Image (cartoon, rainbow, N blue to C red; front, side, top):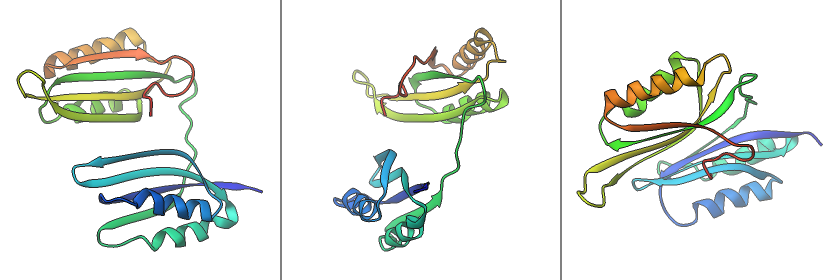
Amino acid sequence: MKRSQVLITVVGRDRPGIVEKISGNIVECGGNVEQSRMARLGGEFAAFLLVSVAEAGVDKLSRALETHGSAELVVTTRLASSHRPAEGAVPHTLTVRGADHEGIIHDFGALMARRGINIAEMTTSVDPSPVSGTPMFSMRATVEVPTSIPVKDLRQWIDDLADELAVDAELKVQGPGPSSLGL
């Protein structure tokens, strides 16, 4: 039986039971969650789920999930496209830390885009410094670096940008196995 991959997004006011309802519909329709990311951001709940389901069950799953949609909870589904890193691209972990200020994500995103480097995953947060309470920015990203880019050059570009933004940044090649983000 041929299976399809469906990307489900869920965004709305956080409350108990959202995960149970969405995952219940997935199970009822013969689906299996292959990957997911869920978080509370402010007072809102956000989830992304990649689900495999029999081709014949895609519409049934979409209709079942639509029943949860409201002004307070937005649920969308779409067939997922397959993505493979550029041939020979090597996954690296980029970490950035420093005093929070506007534009850090944009500036690092622009650096990667100009060089044709894909950002596969990213998590960020701003937390108070334990000593001073100053808002401290933290970013961890998986970037897919084409083999045509010398890592030495990439590290220099990252160091230059980090100096300009007054943050610390580090780039490490990922080892074999699952994502080093621990997600």
